[in-house]
Length: 226
Image (tube, rainbow, N blue to C red):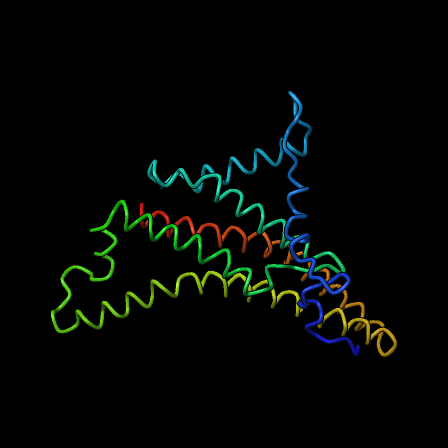
């Protein structure tokens, strides 16, 4: 019980060197490239799920936006697998680090915005000033829309970080409480343990949902600019 509550969020090191790059690269081993004429069930299920998600996500995009298909499906697979691996005991979840999430959000957001200014300049500029705006409110609305535009990548990163971190902290607290209650009240400890199991199941769902939400919002930003 003396363990630091936030120790699981500290970047792991080996011989004084951070190994977070190896941890980030590890999920790629879960999605092997098919080398057989007929795939096994695992690879077939992965491909079917990827095609289903991609079809739903690309349905609203123009041909220019569909060129991001590989980027978006790689993003959702990476975030989802990273979140799920972080639920294993004594593991590290890179998506609990705001710096990493900003590193994913800012380039994707910037790429979508730059694409919009390059191919739909007038429509992109029109977002800063809604039609029919009274003249006295024009400077204020331009400032507000500009701020809201630059807040988008921060909102993406903070949403993912907060949801994953909150779930891990809650599991840590409930698990510590169940362990402490074993010697005091076994019945209460059993109830707490059942709650922990239900919360763990919920966290599995949250891990996948947050990956989908992050990718869907990037897709919506891209749709607004293509």
